[in-house]
Length: 141
Image 1 (spheres, helix red, strand yellow):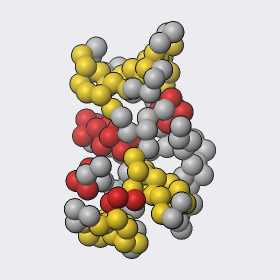
Image 2 (cartoon, helix red, strand yellow):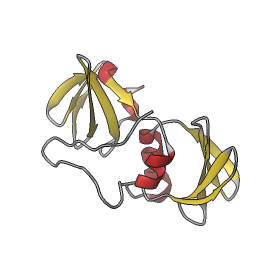
Image 3 (cartoon, helix red, strand yellow):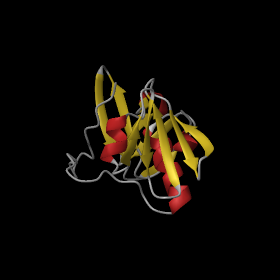
Image 4 (cartoon, helix red, strand yellow):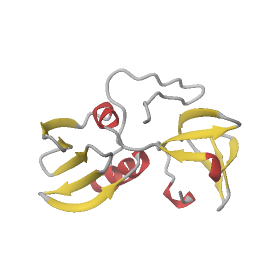
């Protein structure tokens, strides 16, 4: 993962000494190629792990299931954009049925959504977000 991929609001796993913590980036105070000051905690970029896209993630972001086939599922963001989720874990973003790009991780989806719609992609409905430690539970495979 590249440090330049990080945006405020991105969700990541941080693994340090065998402990895995999920968090939302609330502030990036400084950034280098190897280290990052996130939420006033300095960590190595090497400890950050992107969260793979799952069907559960898409639903938690409020992206609605439209159709399920034997090998994939269609999720609609709106009448212009849709995501095809393939059962082996691959996701593809389409605009008017034309492939835009493959999406591998939650932060990629968040960044693309912001670029396309100029709004944040947020967890919908019930969240287990703690404002003091910025954690949230998304099941990862």
